[in-house]
Length: 256
Image (tube, rainbow, N blue to C red; front, side):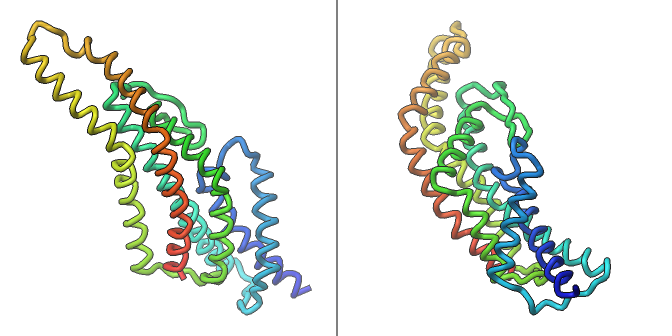
């Protein structure tokens, strides 16, 4: 009986880490997936990981405070792994916000059902395009492989915050702005030249309402530029998402 209770406790702690990661990722946390399905998938993965790793060298203490402390550690590990995956998608959405602002679509807001927030329409288009590429690359397996690897590097209850972890989190957070600028750079440069032309035109013909004349032109030029650069965006987004699995492994090592 004691062996069964010990196994159940270990599976429960593994389940907490996995479910916490699922709750923070942009795919598994989607509201269209029923909570019962998320719990079932997390429990099945927890049982498989327990069967493979067999973490029997952990001293189990059957008291509420020990279980609470272990659960908090597992929740933190899961949330860090899951949230890190969100950062690259934040960069894609931020890039679309830059582009939409320059195109004059700053007021065009749409609802993001995944994050349950309003965002720029161009940002949402790039966000869901990146999500589609993520599925094509089997990116939804990234989080499962990273979680399975985390139990090899970070045994249950052995999470410790380190300077390397904080450095990586700051570096990955800063990459949101870097990714946004890289993706939006071609459009930003093009619209910078258009803004310069607007300024010259306004000085040459003061009677002209430059804003009303150029605003439809800017929207049309913006969609033409987006359509022409779209294959490049597919290539760039694919490479960024492909490299991110290695970043997840580096993050897990920093927590180990």
